[in-house]
Image (cartoon, rainbow, N blue to C red; front, side):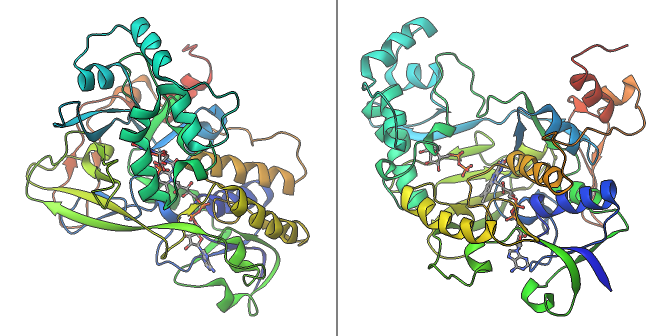
Amino acid sequence: MQFDYLIVGAGFAGSVLAERLASQSGKTVLIVDKRSHIGGNAYDRYDSSGILIHPYGPHIFHTNSDKIFGYLSQFTDWRAYEHRVLASVKDKNDKPVHVPIPINLTTINTLYKLNLTPDQLEIWYRGRAEKIEHCRTSEEVVVSKVGRELYEKFFRGYTRKQWDLDPSELDAQVTARIPTRTTDDDRYFNDTFQYMPLHGYTAMFEKILANPRVKVMLNTDYHEVKETIRFREMIFTGPVDEFFDYRFGKLPYRSLHFQHETHDTEKFLAAPVVNFPSEDVPYTRISEFKALTGQEHPTKTSVVYEFPRSTGDPYYPIPKADCTALYNKYKELADGMPGVHFVGRLATYKYYNMDQVVGQALATYDKIVGKREQVAPVILSAPLTEKDVLRNDLKIPVAPGRKSQPIPAQPVATRADVSFLLSGGNRQ
Ligand code: FAD
Ligand code: UDP
């Protein structure tokens, strides 16, 4: 059989392109992944206790793009979820405390036993910040906002562990992901849309890949099929250096070891995620899945510890000048390959979040079909009623044979709700 497209990788990049090419251009697609599942690093599944976990670490969806949110909303309903993180650090008396990260009013007032207002905190930061004209490194980004003491407490150790590099060696974009606040806003992200897929990521991917023109082949490295399957064009979402047989040497990627644990208690952490900036602790953070998904289980909870590694699956491209220079050599080769499109976090060596990968995949589709519009129009399915928007009796499905866990009463964004949000709030 001949396919129009062979797509390597069933993560966001590959799956979104498969969906667009099949549903909008009538193309036939074979999508192969060497893993045993779809979803790439966003894959989720139920563990042996019936708890929905993210095997590759905590994945929280957030975006400022109504188009990307609207696009994904065709394939899932959403659960409103604003992510919050505590950092485990020592206060000025060397006593361990849990305080909000991003650093905010509560963080400073707790650590220094102060009672500052937001205006006073602004001045307090200014008194400690170092004057730097153009921040180039991840160290400069932080010390220019909050000064050296807080930088050392919250950022230096965490970054050294995560990247095996000092923040002074990393591009500014890495720590610039974390804002600094003068208010008591303790949300991890500032984005307009902060939601989790109501039934999880894998359920959403199943819908993205449901088009009969899309065939999925798992447990298959594309090297095994590329000579035997006939196809017109390829979309590659794996590591770009691997594609070119490491011609210019290996691109460095940072990896993680995930230690999953289930505990016989309803709640394990004081927040959905607790960060451990100290270099004395070998892991960077612990995440508790029920807090992210809203699933309830009265007696058990599952968590994951992240231990950074230099070897293992490639999870993080490294934002650093010499790595970017090496990537640019591969990019030149990639740009010169007619009929092969490189998309996603590993294939374009970009420290992208999920929404950015979706945006990149949608833009690639538009480029393939020669459209000018950056992101494809949102197609919303049958209108749902007002009742759908506030329904709170939805169940998160659990593994077969296990008792279903009702999610707690909370706002659920259905497709009607998304329509409403995207229309600028004019409900008729
Ligand atoms: P991937 O998901 O990596 O998919 C690529 C796929 O290609 C993989 O399934 C792989 O098996 C397959 N593949 C590779 N080589 C081959 C080959 N030779 N043959 C066949 N198949 C191959 N983003 C957020 O927005 N929010 C978060 O909270 C968040 N948390 C994260 C936490 C961690 C620990 C990590 C590592 C990432 C996180 N991300 C988060 C980023 C998110 O995972 C990525 O942006 C997104 O999953 C990238 O999608 P992708 O399709 O580019 O790549
Ligand atoms: N970071 C830090 N301390 C923290 C949180 C983040 O130093 O408590 C730095 C660290 O370098 C990290 C980067 O900021 O790699 C980005 O953090 P984010 O939580 O966005 O990382 P990700 O979820 O992508 O692993």
